[in-house]
Structure formats: C-alpha cells, structure tokens
Length: 197
Image (cartoon, rainbow, N blue to C red; front, side, top):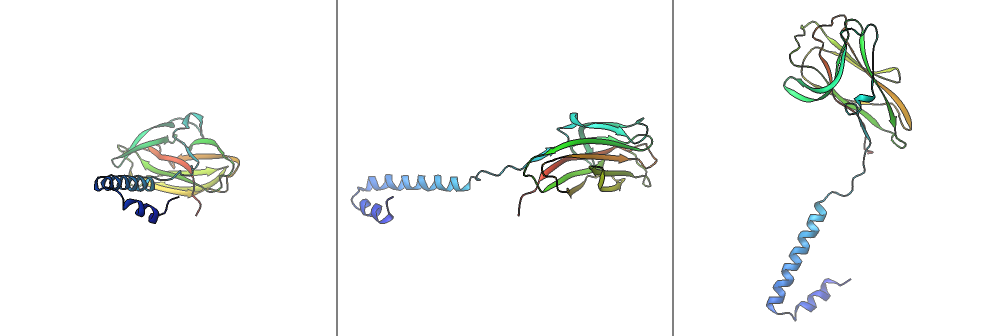
C-alpha cells in the first residue's frame, strides 16, 4: 500500500494538466468513500409477526353466544386516523375471542406485543358505556383495559419468555353488558423481537 509521502513525491514531476486530473480523481474517490460511509451496513434482521397479515390463520369464538359478533381485518378510522386493524365487535352477551398460534423461532428471547386500540369513528357510544380490551397469552391475562373514546391508544407490552415455543395469543373484547356501538378495533397488532442493549 502506497503512503501519502510516496504519492506526494510522484506528484512533483507531473504537469499542471496531469495534476488537475489527479485532483479530480482524488475528489471523486473522496465522494465515493463518503457515500459508502453514509450507507447503513447490513442490519441484523429482527423477527416479527403481523396479526393482520396472518388473520386467515386465526380462530374465532365467543364466550357465550356469538350472535352480534363481527371479526375481520380492514382499515379502521379512529378520531380521523386510519390504519390497518383487526375489527372485533363483541357479541350481544359475553366476549369475542380472536386467537392465534404463533411459532417463536429459536434464538428469539425478548419480544414485545405492539398494538393500538380504538373505537371506530361513527360509533355513538354513550359516555357511560365502555368496551373491555384484553390480551391473553397461553390462557393467562397479560393485559387489559376499558375504553369508550375513539382515538387510538398506543401500547407496547413485554411478553413472557417465548423462545423456541408455540404461543397462543388471544385478543378479547367485551361489551360489558352493552352490545350497541362497540366498534372495537386493534390497530397494527404485531409481535416484535426487541434489540439487545
């Protein structure tokens, strides 16, 4: 590999026109190096699972009678913001359950469940009427809340240790005794492997 001193010594014997060509070449090489440095290196791919994309693999049940229950995937608008979502209108009585079996790859240890919840625009839910949202993992309640406002609420929940296993994730909605206007939706629900550090 040539040193800067060796290259400089050679430059002393070049004509002005040749020196200009060298200057242009050096400038071009500097731009190439700067561009390569700006390019992100190969990123470690992180595992994820999109529940909307895998909707056809889900199962649907009701805790009582499924009458009035509606489960599907479509864009949902909550407080004017639209995103892909799992629609889960609870039945007249009891809960709606949308369940997935998810295979967790070997080596995946730290996983978050990310999602938002909302009540679709157009629902005339009274101020004193709430919809319950719950998430169960392998039959255990991981998270729950109640909601009656339309706007999306963002959530990121730490999952239990899941490496090298098949996990059952259930999205549950319940009208808490009131069925009308329970236009419950889960926005962009997904599992994501967390980066180390």
